[in-house]
Length: 404
Image (cartoon, rainbow, N blue to C red):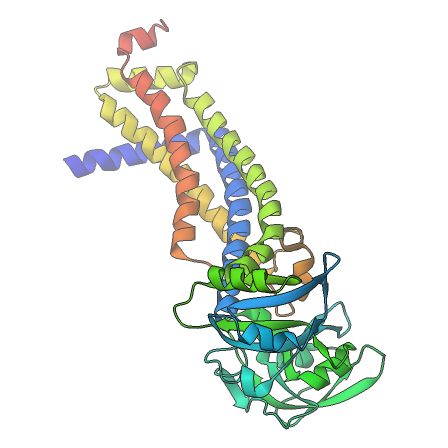
């Protein structure tokens, strides 16, 4: 008997959803738009966070740059001795890096490293995660180790070039000349930023491509001793080298997310506006000021339904509309992000950083994110409908039907 009763209440609630089509359509449409907007932004945010965490795990503990007049300047190689002598620094190795244009608006990152030093760090990009070939050694010149995404970019280019181990790849140097490199290794990475656009080579070759003087480097990559607090090491460096700017892993992640965070706030504001539209619409329809809602509750009470039954009906109505709107919104967000590539929204959220993502957007979906999307769509709708329904349900049916 109890199961049949609940089944009848569900049938009645579904009948109300179909009966009041205009109201139901308005609520579902607003829910779809709000969930779609929030879901699209969240899938991008989660993907960016996952990629940044992966890149931080595979990168140095600290990066030391030189500031001149408030701007980044080449770092003299003489800094190596001073940095290595600071307490808590396990390794300080120079890097020469920059971007090169490969046409079509695409950019690749060329990074020159000291092979013997860089290769000793376990888990560093391009060393422990080699897919094919080998890593650089001290005698290599005009040779490169590339991310696996670069091979895909070459195959997908207009020329359709297929490259691999032993292939020659020419880079356009700062002075306009072509410098031919040999690919000796291909690495994979959990970070799309690394695997899709990074070229590792020796320091001298990178200097020639990027036009940097031989007695300097772009920055120093530092790894701290195990168990050392990175902020403490950074403080020591900052106090001992006046012109240094020290960036820890956390600082790098925060800097990369500044643009995203600022612009994501606008998206969140639009989502709140849409969600408030749903809540106000539902509350207006369900409030005691709606004669139709009051008469319906009065008839249900007169027919023997109690307050709990009325609330259950309203709850099923809200759950049906909420689940439908949230499901369609989440599905639309998945199609928009993962199939269409989130046009316009991705460029707005990531800004100039989007140009560096040659392999496409770093997107990710997790169970907590999906759960959150459903919760923020359904719970406010439940509150906006069940609370007014309760106010009507506790009123005596004869009072409701007389309109008093």
